[in-house]
Length: 445
Image (cartoon, rainbow, N blue to C red; front, side):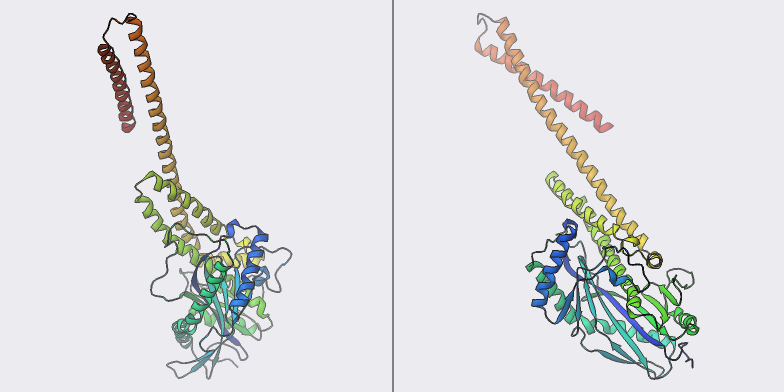
């Protein structure tokens, strides 16, 4: 039997809700060896298990995003979270009832949420919600539930999540984990009109009993997606018996009920990791604008050199994040590499990278300016030293001339002094005139 909504009888329908948040902690992983990284993670988890026992603390491994049918002979190690928390008491309540205008009631049952703390100042909270309806419903009803869940998400998790973030930050400081302090306090500026959570992404998962209902279910869900251009919603999956589309704000995964949960979540986890990277790049792009403005307000060479050193350290770390965007650094599975590339197209990731790289180029121009200024300053200092040596040498020459022409002290001492001073002043004036002329020529050039 097929309902009005287009889902076959026996279809299991759920939505993975993910949202990004700030931690205020930037762990300086760029200075770690792999062994040091493991040691820091182990020490952090050990302390968290003692100080915040309400959560189960673990480390994320590369197999997190590998399904049962993925190649596992070689696994990349980048992009994963620093520590992970599974919290049973994070939600204020574990279910909601949402009544839509047509009279249908959707019962939303939340499963155990997972919180990923990533190294560069941000994290992701992820929770799966099962959707149960008391009667057939329409796509507009599902949109209503989507919008209501967006409104409910903040009150549902933010109070406990803020406490969890504070526990993580305190433990990282207690463990003396090497941190990176940005040169600007607002390098990662907070988004407006929010408390803890940034935007959220909804990944709808429909598990159908047979391949007959796979295409119909995907076709029914397609209008829920929000593409960034006029291209139709298409199946991005390369493997059989599944329909996957990664979109802007919403995604869909349609598969058979025989596909295991771990494989399904491996697709969701790709979205979450990309969401963390996108948020980080987005915040950096906004924050670096302030850095560029600050560069224009420099008033001293010392301040310029200090800022240059700080910006070089920042430039190194930002480029490290950009390098992590390569899909093969996250997975070697051919389908997931393809999916990440399609996701980046829909999320305008390349445009964001271009904007950020343009701001980094402004830093390079600033470095060139500082280096040129330093070179000129050094040349001027050297020129002044040479000038002083020249003046002293001229004074010595004049003294020798006076001594030569006055071997028997025929000139009065006052006359000899006047002769010497006049000569030195004349030589100095010639030097100053020459320097002024050279500077005028340089200025015209």
